[in-house]
Amino acid sequence: MSGRVLVGVKRVIDYAVKIRVKPDNSSVVTDGVKHSMNPFCEIAVEEAVKLKEKKLIKEVVAVSCGPQQAQETIRTALAMGADRGIHVQVAGKDYESMGPLQVSKIMAALAKKEDAQLVILGKQAIDDDCNQTGQMTAALLDWPQGTFASEVALEGDKIKVVREIDGGLETIRINTPAVITADLRLNTPRYATLPNIMKAKKKKIANMKPEDLGVDLTSRLEVLRVDEPPQREAGVKVETVEDLVGKLKDAGRV
Amino acid sequence: MDQVLDLHQEDFDVTVEPGVTRKALNAYLRETGLWFPVDPGADASLCGMAATSASGTNAVRYGTMRENVLNLEVVMADGTVIHTAGKGRRPRKTSAGYNLTNLFVGSEGTLGIITKTTLRLYGVPEAMVSAVCSFPSVQAAVDSTVQILQAGVPIARIEFLDDVMIDACNRFSSLSYPVTPTLFLEFHGSEKSLEEQVSTTEEITQSNGGADFKWATDTEERNRLWKARHDAWYAALALQPGCKAYATDVCVPLSRLPQIIVETKEDLIQNKLTGPIAGHVGDGNFHCLVVLDPNDQEEQHRVHLFTERLARRALAMDGTCTGEHGVGLGKRALLCEEMGPMAIQVMQGLKDTLDPKNLMNPGKILLPAEL
Image 1 (cartoon, rainbow over the protein chains, first blue to last red):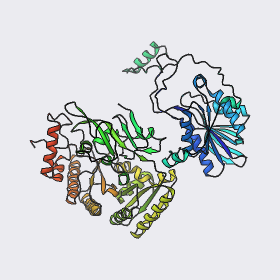
Image 2 (image 1 turned 135 degrees about the horizontal axis):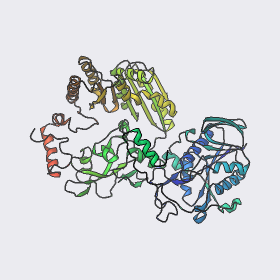
Image 3 (image 1 turned 90 degrees about the vertical axis):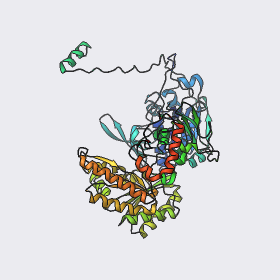
Image 4 (image 1 turned 90 degrees about the horizontal axis):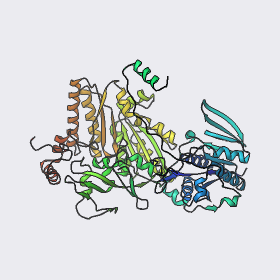
Protein backbone atom coordinates (compact mmCIF):
# COMPACT_ATOMS: atom_id res chain seq x y z
CA MET A 1 0.00 0.00 0.00
CA SER A 2 1.26 3.44 -0.91
CA GLY A 3 0.42 4.90 2.52
CA ARG A 4 -0.83 8.00 0.77
CA VAL A 5 -4.10 9.67 1.82
CA LEU A 6 -5.90 12.24 -0.31
CA VAL A 7 -8.04 14.74 1.58
CA GLY A 8 -10.45 17.05 -0.20
CA VAL A 9 -10.90 20.51 1.30
CA LYS A 10 -13.51 23.01 0.15
CA ARG A 11 -13.49 26.77 0.60
CA VAL A 12 -16.94 27.88 1.73
CA ILE A 13 -18.55 30.95 3.29
CA ASP A 14 -17.62 30.90 7.00
CA TYR A 15 -20.27 29.26 9.17
CA ALA A 16 -20.64 32.35 11.37
CA VAL A 17 -21.55 34.70 8.48
CA LYS A 18 -25.15 35.78 7.92
CA ILE A 19 -25.94 34.70 4.35
CA ARG A 20 -27.55 37.22 1.99
CA VAL A 21 -29.18 36.45 -1.34
CA LYS A 22 -28.28 38.70 -4.28
CA PRO A 23 -31.08 41.10 -5.33
CA ASP A 24 -31.45 39.23 -8.66
CA ASN A 25 -31.99 35.90 -6.81
CA SER A 26 -29.25 34.29 -8.88
CA SER A 27 -27.02 33.24 -5.98
CA VAL A 28 -25.77 34.31 -2.54
CA VAL A 29 -23.42 37.23 -1.96
CA THR A 30 -19.81 36.05 -1.77
CA ASP A 31 -17.83 39.25 -2.51
CA GLY A 32 -16.08 40.57 0.57
CA VAL A 33 -17.61 37.82 2.69
CA LYS A 34 -15.40 35.80 5.06
CA HIS A 35 -14.61 32.32 3.75
CA SER A 36 -12.96 29.41 5.53
CA MET A 37 -12.46 25.66 5.24
CA ASN A 38 -15.68 23.65 5.33
CA PRO A 39 -15.99 22.33 8.93
CA PHE A 40 -16.42 18.71 7.78
CA CYS A 41 -13.28 19.06 5.65
CA GLU A 42 -11.42 20.21 8.81
CA ILE A 43 -12.51 16.98 10.46
CA ALA A 44 -11.31 15.01 7.41
CA VAL A 45 -7.87 16.68 7.53
CA GLU A 46 -7.62 16.07 11.28
CA GLU A 47 -8.35 12.36 10.82
CA ALA A 48 -5.72 12.02 8.09
CA VAL A 49 -3.11 13.85 10.18
CA LYS A 50 -3.95 11.66 13.19
CA LEU A 51 -3.40 8.53 11.05
CA LYS A 52 -0.01 9.87 10.01
CA GLU A 53 0.91 10.69 13.63
CA LYS A 54 0.07 7.12 14.55
CA LYS A 55 2.36 6.06 11.70
CA LEU A 56 -0.45 4.12 10.02
CA ILE A 57 -0.07 6.09 6.80
CA LYS A 58 2.86 7.94 5.30
CA GLU A 59 1.67 11.05 3.48
CA VAL A 60 -1.31 13.39 3.55
CA VAL A 61 -2.10 15.30 0.35
CA ALA A 62 -4.66 18.12 0.56
CA VAL A 63 -6.67 18.84 -2.59
CA SER A 64 -8.91 21.79 -3.40
CA CYS A 65 -10.75 22.73 -6.59
CA GLY A 66 -11.44 26.39 -7.23
CA PRO A 67 -10.02 29.82 -8.04
CA GLN A 68 -6.81 31.34 -6.65
CA GLN A 69 -8.26 31.67 -3.14
CA ALA A 70 -8.54 27.89 -2.83
CA GLN A 71 -4.81 28.00 -2.07
CA GLU A 72 -5.60 29.64 1.31
CA THR A 73 -7.71 26.62 2.22
CA ILE A 74 -4.93 24.27 1.17
CA ARG A 75 -2.46 26.27 3.30
CA THR A 76 -4.73 25.79 6.32
CA ALA A 77 -4.69 22.03 5.70
CA LEU A 78 -0.88 22.18 5.45
CA ALA A 79 -0.74 24.11 8.75
CA MET A 80 -2.82 21.34 10.34
CA GLY A 81 -0.25 18.78 9.22
CA ALA A 82 -0.86 17.82 5.61
CA ASP A 83 2.42 17.24 3.72
CA ARG A 84 1.69 18.81 0.36
CA GLY A 85 -1.19 20.26 -1.60
CA ILE A 86 -2.75 20.08 -5.05
CA HIS A 87 -4.71 23.05 -6.36
CA VAL A 88 -6.95 22.17 -9.30
CA GLN A 89 -7.66 25.52 -10.91
CA VAL A 90 -11.32 26.11 -11.70
CA ALA A 91 -12.57 29.68 -12.08
CA GLY A 92 -15.34 31.83 -13.49
CA LYS A 93 -18.46 30.16 -14.91
CA ASP A 94 -16.89 26.71 -14.53
CA TYR A 95 -16.47 27.37 -10.80
CA GLU A 96 -20.02 28.66 -10.41
CA SER A 97 -21.46 25.53 -12.01
CA MET A 98 -19.03 23.10 -10.36
CA GLY A 99 -20.72 20.54 -8.14
CA PRO A 100 -20.20 17.08 -6.65
CA LEU A 101 -20.14 15.34 -10.03
CA GLN A 102 -17.28 17.49 -11.33
CA VAL A 103 -15.33 17.35 -8.07
CA SER A 104 -15.71 13.60 -7.75
CA LYS A 105 -14.38 13.13 -11.30
CA ILE A 106 -11.34 15.22 -10.31
CA MET A 107 -10.85 13.37 -7.01
CA ALA A 108 -11.14 9.98 -8.75
CA ALA A 109 -8.57 10.99 -11.36
CA LEU A 110 -6.20 12.26 -8.67
CA ALA A 111 -6.68 9.16 -6.52
CA LYS A 112 -5.49 7.06 -9.45
CA LYS A 113 -2.69 9.43 -10.40
CA GLU A 114 -1.38 9.65 -6.83
CA ASP A 115 -1.91 5.93 -6.13
CA ALA A 116 -3.91 6.83 -3.03
CA GLN A 117 -4.69 4.22 -0.40
CA LEU A 118 -7.47 6.28 1.08
CA VAL A 119 -9.58 9.29 0.12
CA ILE A 120 -11.08 11.17 3.07
CA LEU A 121 -13.68 13.88 2.49
CA GLY A 122 -16.08 15.81 4.66
CA LYS A 123 -19.53 14.25 4.52
CA GLN A 124 -20.98 17.42 2.96
CA ALA A 125 -20.26 21.09 2.41
CA ILE A 126 -22.14 23.64 4.46
CA ASP A 127 -22.98 25.76 1.42
CA ASP A 128 -24.72 23.25 -0.82
CA ASP A 129 -25.34 20.41 1.71
CA CYS A 130 -25.13 17.96 -1.21
CA ASN A 131 -23.54 14.99 0.63
CA GLN A 132 -22.71 13.39 -2.74
CA THR A 133 -19.03 13.90 -3.57
CA GLY A 134 -17.69 11.03 -1.43
CA GLN A 135 -20.26 8.60 -2.73
CA MET A 136 -19.75 9.60 -6.38
CA THR A 137 -15.96 9.41 -6.02
CA ALA A 138 -16.20 5.87 -4.68
CA ALA A 139 -18.54 4.87 -7.50
CA LEU A 140 -16.26 6.32 -10.20
CA LEU A 141 -13.30 4.44 -8.71
CA ASP A 142 -15.34 1.34 -7.96
CA TRP A 143 -13.98 1.51 -4.40
CA PRO A 144 -15.82 0.72 -1.15
CA GLN A 145 -17.15 3.69 0.83
CA GLY A 146 -17.46 4.35 4.59
CA THR A 147 -19.69 7.43 4.81
CA PHE A 148 -20.87 9.43 7.87
CA ALA A 149 -17.86 8.03 9.74
CA SER A 150 -17.74 8.69 13.48
CA GLU A 151 -14.88 6.23 13.98
CA VAL A 152 -12.22 4.92 11.63
CA ALA A 153 -9.77 2.12 12.45
CA LEU A 154 -7.19 0.72 10.07
CA GLU A 155 -6.92 -3.07 10.40
CA GLY A 156 -4.24 -4.37 8.07
CA ASP A 157 -5.60 -4.08 4.55
CA LYS A 158 -9.16 -3.46 5.77
CA ILE A 159 -10.81 -0.51 7.50
CA LYS A 160 -13.43 -0.69 10.25
CA VAL A 161 -15.82 2.26 10.00
CA VAL A 162 -18.51 3.13 12.52
CA ARG A 163 -21.21 5.07 10.66
CA GLU A 164 -23.81 7.44 12.06
CA ILE A 165 -27.15 6.40 10.66
CA ASP A 166 -30.75 7.33 11.48
CA GLY A 167 -31.26 4.34 13.75
CA GLY A 168 -27.99 4.74 15.64
CA LEU A 169 -24.56 3.43 14.71
CA GLU A 170 -23.59 0.90 12.06
CA THR A 171 -20.18 -0.78 12.01
CA ILE A 172 -18.81 -2.02 8.68
CA ARG A 173 -15.50 -3.45 7.51
CA ILE A 174 -14.35 -2.43 4.04
CA ASN A 175 -11.36 -3.21 1.86
CA THR A 176 -8.74 -0.66 0.90
CA PRO A 177 -8.36 1.38 -1.15
CA ALA A 178 -11.55 3.14 0.00
CA VAL A 179 -13.36 6.47 0.32
CA ILE A 180 -14.34 7.74 3.77
CA THR A 181 -16.53 10.74 4.52
CA ALA A 182 -16.20 12.40 7.90
CA ASP A 183 -19.14 13.10 10.19
CA LEU A 184 -19.23 15.56 13.09
CA ARG A 185 -18.18 13.24 15.90
CA LEU A 186 -15.18 11.69 14.15
CA ASN A 187 -12.75 14.02 15.94
CA THR A 188 -12.14 17.58 17.15
CA PRO A 189 -9.92 19.39 14.61
CA ARG A 190 -6.79 21.07 15.95
CA TYR A 191 -6.23 24.81 15.65
CA ALA A 192 -3.40 25.80 13.31
CA THR A 193 -0.61 27.26 15.45
CA LEU A 194 1.66 30.08 14.30
CA PRO A 195 4.81 27.92 14.03
CA ASN A 196 2.89 25.40 11.91
CA ILE A 197 1.47 28.16 9.73
CA MET A 198 5.05 29.35 9.15
CA LYS A 199 6.19 25.80 8.28
CA ALA A 200 3.23 25.40 5.95
CA LYS A 201 4.44 28.30 3.81
CA LYS A 202 7.38 26.13 2.77
CA LYS A 203 5.29 23.09 1.83
CA LYS A 204 4.58 22.59 -1.86
CA ILE A 205 1.27 23.15 -3.62
CA ALA A 206 1.14 21.76 -7.16
CA ASN A 207 -1.09 23.55 -9.67
CA MET A 208 -3.04 21.77 -12.36
CA LYS A 209 -6.11 22.15 -14.54
CA PRO A 210 -9.05 19.74 -14.90
CA GLU A 211 -8.00 19.13 -18.55
CA ASP A 212 -4.65 17.80 -17.25
CA LEU A 213 -6.65 15.06 -15.54
CA GLY A 214 -8.90 14.46 -18.53
CA VAL A 215 -11.94 15.76 -16.66
CA ASP A 216 -14.89 17.41 -18.40
CA LEU A 217 -16.50 20.03 -16.17
CA THR A 218 -19.79 20.32 -18.04
CA SER A 219 -22.66 20.57 -15.63
CA ARG A 220 -26.01 18.93 -16.20
CA LEU A 221 -27.65 21.24 -13.66
CA GLU A 222 -28.88 24.80 -14.06
CA VAL A 223 -29.67 26.92 -11.02
CA LEU A 224 -32.94 28.68 -11.74
CA ARG A 225 -33.44 30.75 -8.63
CA VAL A 226 -32.15 31.25 -5.09
CA ASP A 227 -34.46 32.54 -2.36
CA GLU A 228 -34.13 33.14 1.35
CA PRO A 229 -36.19 30.83 3.54
CA PRO A 230 -39.67 32.31 4.24
CA GLN A 231 -39.79 34.65 7.21
CA ARG A 232 -40.89 32.82 10.29
CA GLU A 233 -44.38 33.96 11.23
CA ALA A 234 -45.35 34.78 14.78
CA GLY A 235 -47.16 32.06 16.66
CA VAL A 236 -50.66 32.46 18.03
CA LYS A 237 -51.54 31.73 21.65
CA VAL A 238 -54.91 30.18 22.42
CA GLU A 239 -56.75 29.92 25.73
CA THR A 240 -58.26 26.45 25.53
CA VAL A 241 -57.85 23.14 23.78
CA GLU A 242 -61.14 23.75 21.97
CA ASP A 243 -59.71 26.97 20.55
CA LEU A 244 -56.63 25.05 19.43
CA VAL A 245 -58.65 22.40 17.64
CA GLY A 246 -60.85 25.09 16.08
CA LYS A 247 -57.82 26.96 14.72
CA LEU A 248 -56.27 23.76 13.38
CA LYS A 249 -59.54 22.96 11.57
CA ASP A 250 -59.69 26.49 10.14
CA ALA A 251 -56.18 26.07 8.79
CA GLY A 252 -57.20 22.80 7.20
CA ARG A 253 -54.70 20.88 9.29
CA VAL A 254 -57.24 18.63 10.98
CA MET B 1 -22.29 46.63 15.28
CA ASP B 2 -21.19 43.02 15.39
CA GLN B 3 -18.29 43.02 12.95
CA VAL B 4 -14.66 42.10 13.38
CA LEU B 5 -12.87 45.00 11.67
CA ASP B 6 -9.18 45.37 10.82
CA LEU B 7 -7.34 42.19 11.70
CA HIS B 8 -3.54 42.61 11.42
CA GLN B 9 -2.08 39.14 11.79
CA GLU B 10 1.58 40.12 11.67
CA ASP B 11 1.02 42.90 14.22
CA PHE B 12 -1.05 40.68 16.53
CA ASP B 13 -3.93 43.14 16.77
CA VAL B 14 -7.60 43.31 15.84
CA THR B 15 -10.37 45.87 16.21
CA VAL B 16 -13.91 44.78 17.05
CA GLU B 17 -17.36 46.32 17.44
CA PRO B 18 -19.42 45.91 20.64
CA GLY B 19 -21.53 43.03 19.30
CA VAL B 20 -18.52 40.73 18.98
CA THR B 21 -18.15 38.28 21.86
CA ARG B 22 -14.86 36.68 22.85
CA LYS B 23 -15.88 33.24 21.55
CA ALA B 24 -17.06 34.75 18.26
CA LEU B 25 -13.70 36.50 17.87
CA ASN B 26 -11.74 33.33 18.58
CA ALA B 27 -13.89 31.39 16.10
CA TYR B 28 -13.16 34.11 13.52
CA LEU B 29 -9.42 33.83 14.22
CA ARG B 30 -9.20 30.04 14.21
CA GLU B 31 -7.37 29.68 10.90
CA THR B 32 -4.81 32.38 11.73
CA GLY B 33 -3.05 30.72 14.64
CA LEU B 34 -4.00 33.68 16.86
CA TRP B 35 -6.37 33.99 19.79
CA PHE B 36 -7.58 36.41 22.43
CA PRO B 37 -6.98 34.61 25.71
CA VAL B 38 -8.88 36.67 28.32
CA ASP B 39 -11.73 34.34 29.30
CA PRO B 40 -14.21 35.44 31.95
CA GLY B 41 -16.87 32.79 32.58
CA ALA B 42 -19.51 34.11 30.20
CA ASP B 43 -19.20 34.50 26.43
CA ALA B 44 -19.01 38.25 27.00
CA SER B 45 -18.89 41.14 24.56
CA LEU B 46 -15.28 42.32 24.19
CA CYS B 47 -16.18 46.00 24.50
CA GLY B 48 -18.15 45.09 27.63
CA MET B 49 -15.09 43.25 28.91
CA ALA B 50 -13.07 46.41 28.32
CA ALA B 51 -15.63 48.51 30.20
CA THR B 52 -15.47 46.18 33.20
CA SER B 53 -11.74 45.38 33.02
CA ALA B 54 -12.60 41.69 32.83
CA SER B 55 -10.21 38.95 33.75
CA GLY B 56 -10.10 35.21 33.24
CA THR B 57 -8.46 32.11 34.57
CA ASN B 58 -5.30 32.60 32.53
CA ALA B 59 -4.56 36.15 33.65
CA VAL B 60 -1.43 34.88 35.39
CA ARG B 61 0.13 34.39 31.94
CA TYR B 62 -1.80 36.59 29.53
CA GLY B 63 -2.99 39.44 31.73
CA THR B 64 -6.43 41.03 32.06
CA MET B 65 -8.18 43.54 29.79
CA ARG B 66 -6.01 46.33 31.26
CA GLU B 67 -2.94 44.80 29.66
CA ASN B 68 -4.58 43.88 26.39
CA VAL B 69 -6.54 46.89 25.14
CA LEU B 70 -4.51 49.04 22.73
CA ASN B 71 -7.11 51.59 21.71
CA LEU B 72 -10.78 52.42 22.20
CA GLU B 73 -13.39 54.37 20.30
CA VAL B 74 -15.54 56.05 22.96
CA VAL B 75 -18.70 58.13 22.71
CA MET B 76 -18.60 60.79 25.41
CA ALA B 77 -21.52 62.13 27.41
CA ASP B 78 -21.83 65.16 25.11
CA GLY B 79 -21.86 63.02 21.97
CA THR B 80 -18.29 63.62 20.88
CA VAL B 81 -16.40 60.59 19.69
CA ILE B 82 -12.79 60.09 20.72
CA HIS B 83 -10.12 57.51 20.04
CA THR B 84 -8.16 56.99 23.22
CA ALA B 85 -4.90 56.26 21.45
CA GLY B 86 -5.63 58.21 18.30
CA LYS B 87 -7.74 57.05 15.36
CA GLY B 88 -6.58 53.77 13.88
CA ARG B 89 -3.42 53.66 15.94
CA ARG B 90 -2.13 50.38 17.33
CA PRO B 91 1.50 50.52 18.39
CA ARG B 92 2.38 47.87 20.93
CA LYS B 93 3.62 50.51 23.29
CA THR B 94 3.52 54.28 23.60
CA SER B 95 4.40 57.09 25.90
CA ALA B 96 2.20 59.65 24.17
CA GLY B 97 0.14 61.74 26.56
CA TYR B 98 -2.24 60.62 29.28
CA ASN B 99 -3.26 56.95 29.27
CA LEU B 100 -6.87 57.54 28.21
CA THR B 101 -7.27 53.95 27.07
CA ASN B 102 -6.84 52.60 30.60
CA LEU B 103 -8.97 55.41 32.03
CA PHE B 104 -11.96 53.91 30.25
CA VAL B 105 -11.01 50.27 30.82
CA GLY B 106 -12.87 49.34 33.98
CA SER B 107 -14.89 52.55 34.12
CA GLU B 108 -18.10 50.48 33.98
CA GLY B 109 -19.72 52.85 31.49
CA THR B 110 -19.59 55.84 33.82
CA LEU B 111 -17.28 58.00 31.68
CA GLY B 112 -18.32 57.11 28.14
CA ILE B 113 -19.66 54.33 25.94
CA ILE B 114 -17.14 52.08 24.22
CA THR B 115 -18.02 51.50 20.56
CA LYS B 116 -14.82 49.87 19.29
CA THR B 117 -11.90 48.17 20.96
CA THR B 118 -8.47 47.29 19.54
CA LEU B 119 -7.09 44.20 21.21
CA ARG B 120 -3.70 42.54 21.60
CA LEU B 121 -3.68 38.99 20.24
CA TYR B 122 -1.45 36.04 21.10
CA GLY B 123 -0.29 32.92 19.30
CA VAL B 124 -2.39 29.83 19.97
CA PRO B 125 -0.38 27.52 22.24
CA GLU B 126 1.39 24.74 20.35
CA ALA B 127 0.52 22.24 23.00
CA MET B 128 -1.09 22.13 26.43
CA VAL B 129 -0.65 20.03 29.51
CA SER B 130 -3.08 19.99 32.45
CA ALA B 131 -2.24 18.77 35.92
CA VAL B 132 -3.80 18.31 39.36
CA CYS B 133 -2.09 18.09 42.75
CA SER B 134 -3.42 17.77 46.33
CA PHE B 135 -1.82 19.44 49.32
CA PRO B 136 -1.98 18.90 53.07
CA SER B 137 -2.80 22.57 53.70
CA VAL B 138 -3.74 25.88 52.08
CA GLN B 139 -0.29 27.17 53.00
CA ALA B 140 1.40 24.33 51.13
CA ALA B 141 -0.69 24.97 48.01
CA VAL B 142 0.02 28.72 48.02
CA ASP B 143 3.73 28.24 48.83
CA SER B 144 3.92 25.99 45.78
CA THR B 145 2.24 28.65 43.67
CA VAL B 146 4.71 31.32 44.76
CA GLN B 147 7.66 29.05 44.11
CA ILE B 148 6.37 28.01 40.69
CA LEU B 149 6.14 31.66 39.70
CA GLN B 150 9.54 32.41 41.20
CA ALA B 151 11.05 29.52 39.24
CA GLY B 152 10.04 31.35 36.08
CA VAL B 153 7.58 28.71 34.92
CA PRO B 154 5.28 30.57 32.50
CA ILE B 155 2.27 28.79 33.92
CA ALA B 156 -0.95 29.50 32.04
CA ARG B 157 -3.53 28.65 34.70
CA ILE B 158 -3.20 27.91 38.37
CA GLU B 159 -6.49 27.41 40.14
CA PHE B 160 -7.09 26.63 43.78
CA LEU B 161 -10.04 24.67 45.19
CA ASP B 162 -10.41 24.29 48.96
CA ASP B 163 -11.47 21.07 50.68
CA VAL B 164 -15.14 22.12 50.91
CA MET B 165 -15.21 22.78 47.17
CA ILE B 166 -13.46 19.50 46.38
CA ASP B 167 -15.96 17.64 48.52
CA ALA B 168 -18.83 19.37 46.70
CA CYS B 169 -17.31 18.46 43.34
CA ASN B 170 -16.78 14.84 44.36
CA ARG B 171 -20.45 14.57 45.25
CA PHE B 172 -21.72 16.47 42.24
CA SER B 173 -19.66 14.71 39.57
CA SER B 174 -19.07 11.36 41.34
CA LEU B 175 -15.35 11.95 41.44
CA SER B 176 -12.86 10.86 44.05
CA TYR B 177 -10.33 13.62 44.52
CA PRO B 178 -8.71 13.54 47.98
CA VAL B 179 -10.70 16.02 50.08
CA THR B 180 -7.96 18.52 50.75
CA PRO B 181 -6.74 21.83 49.21
CA THR B 182 -6.00 21.17 45.55
CA LEU B 183 -4.28 23.00 42.72
CA PHE B 184 -5.39 22.67 39.09
CA LEU B 185 -2.61 23.66 36.71
CA GLU B 186 -2.35 24.24 32.97
CA PHE B 187 0.81 24.74 30.92
CA HIS B 188 1.12 26.16 27.39
CA GLY B 189 4.12 25.94 25.09
CA SER B 190 6.10 23.78 22.70
CA GLU B 191 6.42 20.05 23.44
CA LYS B 192 9.96 20.53 24.77
CA SER B 193 9.20 23.49 26.96
CA LEU B 194 6.18 21.68 28.41
CA GLU B 195 8.35 18.76 29.57
CA GLU B 196 10.55 21.20 31.45
CA GLN B 197 7.65 23.22 32.88
CA VAL B 198 5.88 20.11 34.17
CA SER B 199 8.98 18.56 35.66
CA THR B 200 10.00 21.78 37.47
CA THR B 201 6.46 22.17 38.80
CA GLU B 202 6.22 18.57 39.97
CA GLU B 203 9.46 18.94 41.95
CA ILE B 204 8.16 22.08 43.62
CA THR B 205 4.82 20.55 44.57
CA GLN B 206 6.53 17.49 46.00
CA SER B 207 8.84 19.60 48.11
CA ASN B 208 5.76 21.26 49.64
CA GLY B 209 4.08 17.99 50.55
CA GLY B 210 2.00 17.81 47.39
CA ALA B 211 0.68 14.38 46.55
CA ASP B 212 -1.02 12.65 43.64
CA PHE B 213 0.51 14.87 40.96
CA LYS B 214 -1.34 13.78 37.82
CA TRP B 215 -0.91 15.33 34.40
CA ALA B 216 -2.29 14.80 30.86
CA THR B 217 -1.76 16.05 27.30
CA ASP B 218 -4.68 14.48 25.47
CA THR B 219 -7.75 16.79 25.28
CA GLU B 220 -10.23 14.31 26.74
CA GLU B 221 -7.82 13.37 29.55
CA ARG B 222 -7.16 17.05 30.36
CA ASN B 223 -10.88 17.77 30.58
CA ARG B 224 -11.31 14.78 32.89
CA LEU B 225 -8.56 16.00 35.23
CA TRP B 226 -10.03 19.49 35.35
CA LYS B 227 -13.65 18.37 35.64
CA ALA B 228 -13.90 19.44 39.26
CA ARG B 229 -12.76 22.96 38.42
CA HIS B 230 -15.15 23.21 35.46
CA ASP B 231 -18.12 22.06 37.51
CA ALA B 232 -17.31 24.12 40.61
CA TRP B 233 -20.18 26.61 40.39
CA TYR B 234 -22.81 23.91 39.85
CA ALA B 235 -21.26 21.67 42.48
CA ALA B 236 -21.51 24.51 45.02
CA LEU B 237 -25.19 25.06 44.16
CA ALA B 238 -25.86 21.34 44.45
CA LEU B 239 -24.76 21.38 48.09
CA GLN B 240 -28.17 22.80 48.99
CA PRO B 241 -30.76 22.18 46.27
CA GLY B 242 -33.05 25.16 45.70
CA CYS B 243 -30.51 27.65 46.95
CA LYS B 244 -28.64 30.44 45.24
CA ALA B 245 -24.96 31.20 45.40
CA TYR B 246 -23.33 34.56 45.99
CA ALA B 247 -19.79 34.86 44.67
CA THR B 248 -17.38 37.09 46.55
CA ASP B 249 -14.27 38.48 44.92
CA VAL B 250 -11.18 39.87 46.62
CA CYS B 251 -7.53 39.97 45.66
CA VAL B 252 -4.46 40.24 47.92
CA PRO B 253 -0.69 40.02 47.46
CA LEU B 254 0.27 36.35 47.06
CA SER B 255 2.08 36.13 50.39
CA ARG B 256 -1.13 37.05 52.27
CA LEU B 257 -3.31 34.49 50.51
CA PRO B 258 -2.95 31.62 53.00
CA GLN B 259 -3.81 33.89 55.90
CA ILE B 260 -6.89 35.40 54.25
CA ILE B 261 -8.23 32.03 53.15
CA VAL B 262 -7.72 30.50 56.59
CA GLU B 263 -9.39 33.47 58.35
CA THR B 264 -12.25 33.45 55.83
CA LYS B 265 -12.90 29.75 56.40
CA GLU B 266 -13.00 30.34 60.17
CA ASP B 267 -15.45 33.21 59.60
CA LEU B 268 -17.72 30.94 57.55
CA ILE B 269 -17.76 28.26 60.25
CA GLN B 270 -18.40 30.75 63.06
CA ASN B 271 -21.31 32.27 61.17
CA LYS B 272 -22.75 28.96 60.06
CA LEU B 273 -22.35 29.69 56.36
CA THR B 274 -21.43 27.30 53.57
CA GLY B 275 -18.91 28.85 51.24
CA PRO B 276 -16.68 26.63 49.10
CA ILE B 277 -13.64 28.49 47.82
CA ALA B 278 -12.20 28.58 44.31
CA GLY B 279 -9.44 30.96 43.29
CA HIS B 280 -7.06 32.26 40.65
CA VAL B 281 -4.27 31.70 43.09
CA GLY B 282 -1.55 32.89 40.72
CA ASP B 283 -3.05 36.38 40.98
CA GLY B 284 -3.86 36.22 44.70
CA ASN B 285 -7.54 36.35 43.72
CA PHE B 286 -10.21 34.02 45.11
CA HIS B 287 -13.98 33.60 45.07
CA CYS B 288 -16.02 32.30 47.94
CA LEU B 289 -19.24 30.79 46.53
CA VAL B 290 -21.53 31.39 49.51
CA VAL B 291 -24.59 29.17 49.28
CA LEU B 292 -27.79 30.72 50.59
CA ASP B 293 -31.53 30.23 50.76
CA PRO B 294 -33.17 33.04 48.73
CA ASN B 295 -36.15 33.07 51.09
CA ASP B 296 -34.18 33.35 54.32
CA GLN B 297 -33.75 37.06 55.02
CA GLU B 298 -31.71 36.46 58.15
CA GLU B 299 -29.24 34.30 56.26
CA GLN B 300 -28.98 36.88 53.49
CA HIS B 301 -28.12 39.50 56.07
CA ARG B 302 -25.45 37.26 57.59
CA VAL B 303 -23.99 36.69 54.13
CA HIS B 304 -23.94 40.41 53.43
CA LEU B 305 -22.04 41.11 56.63
CA PHE B 306 -19.66 38.26 55.87
CA THR B 307 -18.81 39.71 52.46
CA GLU B 308 -18.12 43.11 53.99
CA ARG B 309 -15.80 41.56 56.57
CA LEU B 310 -14.06 39.66 53.78
CA ALA B 311 -13.53 42.81 51.72
CA ARG B 312 -12.15 44.66 54.73
CA ARG B 313 -9.90 41.73 55.55
CA ALA B 314 -8.46 41.98 52.02
CA LEU B 315 -8.02 45.75 52.34
CA ALA B 316 -6.18 45.27 55.64
CA MET B 317 -3.77 42.98 53.80
CA ASP B 318 -2.83 45.57 51.12
CA GLY B 319 -5.30 44.07 48.70
CA THR B 320 -8.42 45.18 46.85
CA CYS B 321 -12.13 44.75 47.57
CA THR B 322 -12.69 43.47 44.03
CA GLY B 323 -10.23 41.53 41.87
CA GLU B 324 -12.53 40.98 38.90
CA HIS B 325 -16.18 41.63 39.52
CA GLY B 326 -16.09 45.42 39.73
CA VAL B 327 -17.63 48.01 42.05
CA GLY B 328 -21.09 48.73 40.60
CA LEU B 329 -23.43 49.78 43.41
CA GLY B 330 -22.55 47.26 46.11
CA LYS B 331 -18.91 48.13 46.68
CA ARG B 332 -18.99 51.92 46.43
CA ALA B 333 -18.38 52.44 50.15
CA LEU B 334 -15.61 49.85 50.15
CA LEU B 335 -13.99 51.65 47.21
CA CYS B 336 -13.78 54.79 49.36
CA GLU B 337 -12.05 52.80 52.10
CA GLU B 338 -9.71 51.24 49.56
CA MET B 339 -8.72 54.42 47.71
CA GLY B 340 -8.84 56.98 50.46
CA PRO B 341 -10.58 60.35 50.13
CA MET B 342 -7.93 62.09 47.99
CA ALA B 343 -7.93 59.50 45.21
CA ILE B 344 -11.73 59.38 45.31
CA GLN B 345 -11.75 63.14 44.88
CA VAL B 346 -9.65 62.80 41.75
CA MET B 347 -12.01 60.16 40.44
CA GLN B 348 -14.99 62.38 41.19
CA GLY B 349 -13.27 65.27 39.44
CA LEU B 350 -12.82 63.17 36.31
CA LYS B 351 -16.44 62.09 36.43
CA ASP B 352 -17.66 65.69 36.88
CA THR B 353 -15.53 66.91 33.98
CA LEU B 354 -16.36 64.16 31.53
CA ASP B 355 -20.02 63.71 32.47
CA PRO B 356 -21.28 66.90 34.17
CA LYS B 357 -24.93 65.93 33.74
CA ASN B 358 -24.37 62.45 35.21
CA LEU B 359 -25.89 60.67 32.21
CA MET B 360 -23.46 57.77 32.06
CA ASN B 361 -24.52 54.81 34.23
CA PRO B 362 -25.37 57.15 37.13
CA GLY B 363 -24.74 55.95 40.65
CA LYS B 364 -22.10 53.38 39.81
CA ILE B 365 -18.57 53.25 41.24
CA LEU B 366 -18.72 56.59 43.10
CA LEU B 367 -21.07 57.35 45.97
CA PRO B 368 -23.29 60.37 45.27
CA ALA B 369 -22.05 63.52 47.00
CA GLU B 370 -25.03 63.69 49.35
CA LEU B 371 -24.19 60.41 51.10
